[in-house]
Amino acid sequence: MNDEKQALVPKLRFPKYVGQRLRKALLKEVTAESGERVGDNFSTMQVMGVSKMEGIVPMEGRLISSDISRYKIVRKNWFAYNPMRLNIGSIARWKGEQNILVSPDYVVFKCLNGADLQIDPEYLNHFRQSDVWKQFVTEGGDGSVRVRIYYRDLARLQLLLPGRDEQQKIADCLSSLDTLIAAQADKLDALKTHKRGLMQQLFPREGEIIPRLRFPEFREAGEWEQTNLEQLVDFRSGGTPSKANPAFWSGSIPWVSAKDMKQLFLDDTEDHISTVAVDDGAKMASPGTLLMLTRGMTLLKDVPICVLQRGMSFNQDVKALRPKKDMDGLFLAFSLLANLHRLLKMVDIAGHGTGKLNTDELKLFELVRPQSDEQQKIADCFSSIDALIVAQADKLDALKTHKKGLMQQLFPSPEA
Image (tube, rainbow, N blue to C red; front, side):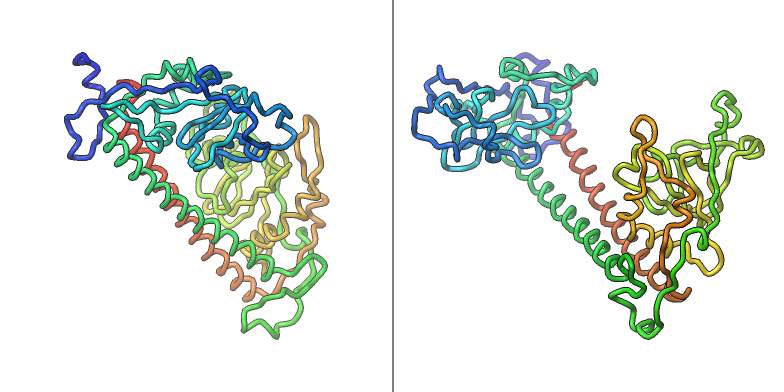
């Protein structure tokens, strides 16, 4: 190996391996011609496929040919993938003791374990999340995704490996991080599930005027008031300043469009306008105002609702709902989210398949509300849960960022 190839080392290594060079890996495709014929020793129950999220999974019955003698065998620690779907699927390693079958259209390969170099399958699994792999599957890193990847393509990938014990050390490190990430994701999902359950309890069901669960001090407070959105808020429409005037788009005032409405509490946006645009007629909404998306493709699956943390402008696809007297804005936001299924039923299909909420129908949207102090109590409860959800989501993002950084350090970069 020449000096240039010896320089191809990761930026970060465990201390005991510093100075050791990497070696080119050897992979071998498994074919019927190589002696791995199936015969009649398998059943259709042993035919498997590859799922991006789940790895090796049972194949759907309708996809299994009656002649499984053509199917390829997969042994423990061998890999399989569909060359036509690699970029939306995955390469999966079979960990089971019992041999299985995959479609004859699949590519099956195994790691060659030489006397001086062995390939750890778990290390190879993690390698597929590295920048080197991402560059490989996007046709040389130019962003264009390969249509198909056959074994001859995979074999040309320059896979440089450390020794087997260092591979295992790296795999153990990254697998431990994966365990932490999965645990954190479960914690976040549990909080979201808890919030959904509380919403079903603390807000009355459709057609009812008393919730199933109330805070102790309000259990004798009586029925909630029946009302509608027009009685609770003032509606205001937005607009888009002229794109032809650069002076309108050179300021610091947040301007809300659908792409910004991904969280309940909104404190900034991607686009900003100037005071010149506001003076020219751009609509403004004050802090505490609710914004609801009323036109867009997003409405086919969700009705985004945001609470403004600061004054903002907004476009014509969004309606501003300014709470009236005795209406707590946060309570209203959570009440609308609790009735999201009803809002989705009101979405009509406009031109080009775009979703649309009719403003006149929105104004008549029926809700129930308690007295101000109970509104505040419920709003505070869900605000606290949302703060916990954001904190746990931040922790999850931090773990993922940490892992991504480690991957960039532990594997040689494509630039090398």
